[in-house]
Length: 223
Ligand SMILES: [Zn+2]
Image (cartoon, rainbow, N blue to C red; front, side, top):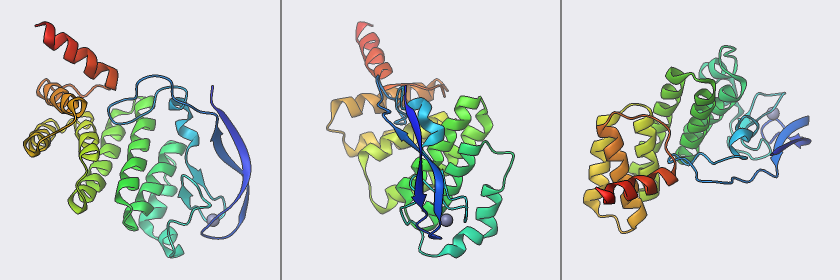
């Protein structure tokens, strides 16, 4: 069971001391992670507590004592306010999307994608598949921009799962094939890419773990 502590923390943007900032302690994943890197329990259920918000200026980040933005005006924009003030959004998703927005604006594309993905997981847990797809598409935008700046095979493989879970099956297959054509050295990474192609061809957008890749490989070899 993961534990949440409430600790005082100074906001890096406005400098105010927040009295009770949630922080997860003692959360270690046991078991195979999902193909989009979502950890197993008990870190999995700590998801709503892995994002912080300053109660004074509204700054959202995984750690509000870390300065992501040096321009406080980003918190005053209509775009940021429309996310942070959206009462229709679940609390954790709202904070993750706000953080993703700031990270994207400041060029932290990889981290922005991960925060959008965190929001998608919140929606997954609530069974809100449309919002989950929309959050994943936000992650896709940041990740594709990041990959264009600097190609990274592991990141590209995570993108495949995000695309498939967002029901972008044809794009998932197209990018999978281009990863294969570049040559994959690691056997397990190759298996993941083959598995994603298989799932996307079958229009399967369900959640899969790294253990499912092994099972699929074993079953395939039996045929
Ligand atoms: Zn603040």
